[in-house]
Length: 352
Length: 273
Image 1 (cartoon, chains in turn blue, purple):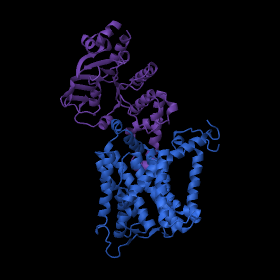
Image 2: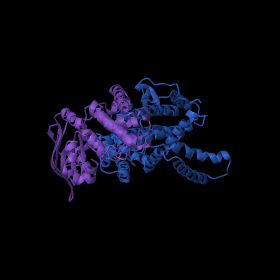
Image 3: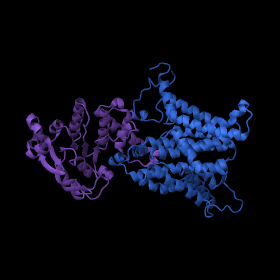
């Protein structure tokens, strides 16, 4: 009964094209953002650093990959590599030019990731599907290998390179709450940017290439430009996520932190959350980041006397089973479940 | 009988030459899909290409919109002979088309499909789109307005937000026409727009084709198997068989041409007439 759009008439195209055309959605999203801002003050520092921060950063990476895979239909297994390029580029720029504002350094770092994305996206002009996946896999291994060369970072001294402190108009981002709020701001802004892109002519071109590339070319879409733009934008988001991962979560730079498992994790988030959905990127990230931790603490709650090795086995098994279950129940991901729920809510409590 | 007033109307309406095909050949290996085909499409004409299956009709359209490169011969579009080109270049020169097998973007809504068809008119850059400022916003609204007019014209208002994959066949054909119209083309290529339709849907589609020609002044090149439709709609017809042109003229001339009757229309058509 609450989720009703009747009586909300649109008199302009602007109102109908709005991001959230239904009033209840607007209220809901504002409430979620308010809760997200209030959340760090309600939970422990451990929860912020170990749960919320990775969730936000992975969401950003998932949005980036979703633009490429879900909207433009080009598969990539190089996410980890592009994250690493973003982080290392930002670090190098900020180290070599210390007077540069940190946000500018971050943007430049993400732009470097964009460049790497375009470079490794070039094969997409010729090949599709699994073959493209394999060539982007090369990006993953090559980039991580390359970034361990001393030209980029000289590990020799201690083996650890710490990230610069983030300072912004006199605000030093050092406590867990600060880091969380900084990440939240970046993720919310970038999610809005992604939403704007996918509802504009840029996004429609991506989807046209995804749905039928031959027809897209015949109505005048240039496949090369469109695919490379998707690689560039996607890698920008992914690179920014890499920067946040290094600067906020790890606090140090390490190429091996962006290994192939990172790429897989982000791809799983996109698939589980829902291809071609910004909301799905958040849901997928939440699922992949939060569910294993939840599964880890459940045996403790139930008071089961299990040793840690056993708990981690159960965690892996259950997580795998859940992925299979969700994909069988709804192959289009959690975002589709959410859409279906909203459809049902529009009529509830009446059957039709 | 019906063709008589149409012929004079067609002759009066037809303007200067829009597309000239001269001695075009197309071969795949040893197979000759087109052999020395020549014809001319004038502005505001409804021009039909007919012929039995495998005659090279679709190949001809594919040559016109840059999907295939003719192995010999010239295609002159808007007075300029053209060389190698890609389909997107043909589109940007004002050639739009629909497909024999529907080629819509199935994951998108009707409105989004038609809006995608209009992308050539979009000037806004990636950054403007990302920030939803200035030109991006204005253009989106202007294009929405234009696309809504197409939606009204094609009478698909209630399917505006439906994913096109779920629409019935006849409506999908209409959406595809809408997507081609959104580009405001000068030359509209329709590859069997009425294939697989029932009588009512055919009548609707014929009405849309005539209205498009009449209201928007678009030149239309059409492939269709339904002879009644072709004879009724066309100003001029070219007949292909085994890649060769075997006849050309007004519907009356073509339907009385003995070579055409022999190759395509058959003796039955004569009996009916």
